[in-house]
Amino acid sequence: GRRLLADLRGRVTGLAWPTYVLDIPGGAGKVPIGPDYLDGNRVRDPAGMWHEVADPAPAG
Image 1: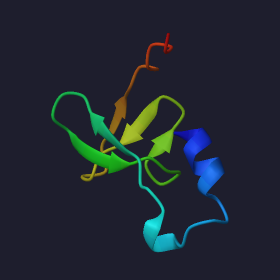
Image 2 (image 1 turned 90 degrees about the horizontal axis):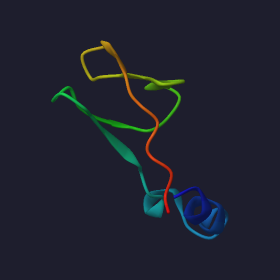
Image 3 (image 1 turned 30 degrees about the vertical axis):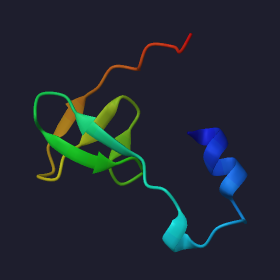
Image 4 (image 1 turned 120 degrees about the vertical axis):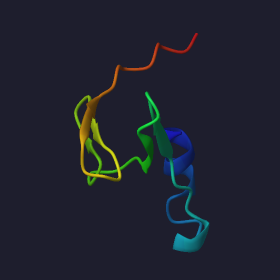
């Protein structure tokens, strides 16, 4: 995902910019990945509640 964004930077308009979304475990909702919703391993749901999330397993 990060590589894709780096490749797209400066090539596409803001309307074509992808939004990565995290599905919070336990049915707490989905949020865009960005500074307003993420703080380390914590994510804030649409209701303003914070949830701990685990780092994903490394690809491979």
